[in-house]
Length: 175
Image (cartoon, rainbow, N blue to C red):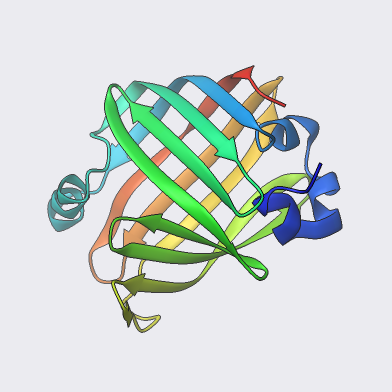
């Protein structure tokens, strides 16, 4: 069986991820549980709404359905019924996350068993944003008490947070 996009991107470092994080990135998976969602204030929260990001909810029901193929990952997230889908296409040692016209060039790495994503570039359509105008991202995946644990925090310079969502989910299908 050929490696999937994340395995190809990480190489041997994929085996350095915690077992549950590895299982959450093999074949077809489903994660379920509740997460804490916090939208930014003011303009940040307004922009998050326009972009279809989830609303603030400290106990938001979340489901993730994922497919891990040799050239891409597809993750369909449902936040209390609000869907957010993205594709992560393999490009060298990066995954390009695509959501509509937005493309994030992510460099995954294994750090102390966790999967971390570093944002190296942002494109809106064909335009590459200067680093000082692009979003900030804190994103990682790990394991705690037998559950898939993660955090995603997205912001913009001068505006602040757009949205942060984090929590622990049960892997109900996968691996």
